[in-house]
Amino acid sequence: MEAGTITITGRGGDEIEAYLARPTSGAPAGGVVVIHHLPGYDAGTKEIVRRFAADGYAALCPNLYSRQAPGASPDDAAAFVRAQGGIADDQLVGDVEGAARHLRGLPGATGKVGVIGYCSGGRHAFLAACSLPLDAAVDCYGACVVNPPPAGFPLAVEPLIGLAPQLSCPLLGLFGADDKFPSPEETATLSAELDRLGKPHEFHTYDGAGHAFFSVDRPAYRPEAAVDGWAKIFTFFGTHLGA
Image (cartoon, rainbow, N blue to C red):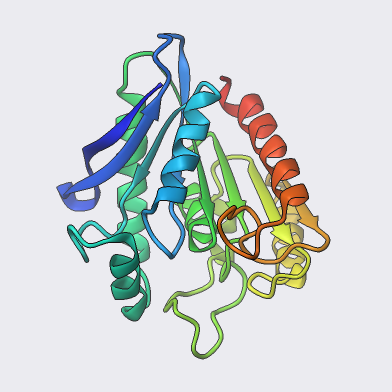
């Protein structure tokens, strides 16, 4: 593969930093927009981007904090943005739209693009899939989709469940049974609403796992849940994006 930092055009024509990884085989490739978590555009997220490239996809992660904290370390940028309550939903949609456009313009692109996000990025993946024409979406424990954040929560956001009628593509949800944000009750509510609307989706909740169970460098990491979750992600994207 080849991987590195590039510049893409995001919301409002802004030039923002992004991390791109793609196979060098020349074979046709679907695209995956990776939305980073609240801790930011960090080494762990870039590793995820490369993992998709190793499986045959062109993957791109826009640095959502490019405007707010240009040149800052991931930790400093995340602290600055968290203090502001996160990034605006319209900025997220515009930046993901720019990332998807960039992926569709790459040599060998099939035109099919999916989105995946973790933590706040899971919420953002759902938002993007309800706001843009996409081919597949994966929400990994995204909070505040059904319920508003509790007092003291670092995100100043509104629930997104009202956008569910606009969901443009199949949705895969991966959650932990011990998570509180989102809780199993919240994800069950979302699943019931998607059932009511006839929106294709599959949700999986892992016993013994809480928030951030995919994060290999955090105490929350749960290998069994993460390994099974990755298998489900690649099966899902293989079905809807090809490889």
